[in-house]
Length: 201
Image (cartoon, rainbow, N blue to C red; front, side, top):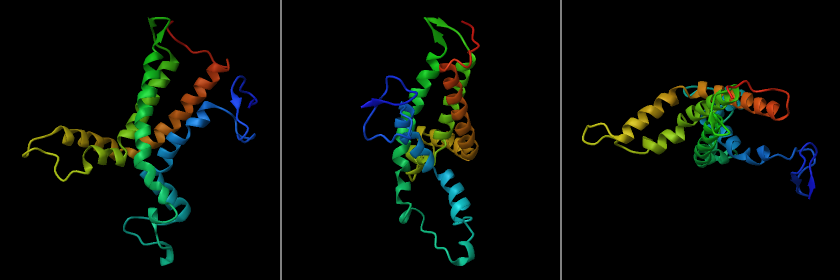
């Protein structure tokens, strides 16, 4: 094993492609990446953009020649989305822990640009994840009845809250995606010494 360029101390396995940077971020990318790529909203976006099928729920395939096979053939792996969601929920707790710790330094409470950016990041990612169709189905969509003799129940209440996020799923999908890039860039520039975090410590 050798160390990759620009990453001193991190061993590069012999099977690792030389053109791929060695970084822990690359290793965990499969989890948030698979959740995003198989997301129902993103599917709709790139199905219509690149395949042109189906262009809409009530619209047939282009020129009537393309038969939409969805997740029953080539794109069978898309059904992994419901499993990727569980990893996405774990990441919310991990990112939330980072955001909370960003308000503490050497035992003192404070606030800085970095702590604000990290907090916004986990809030947007959580909003996107809680609006996920699979999450909404998990907490109540699979049930025929969520009320107890007509009375509100915990399942019904959480399902309604998830529905609020689900109705704004597109907005949170793009906002969280852009903000993840902003957060990663900010942390990267800080670690390289190009920026100095403005804070109260």
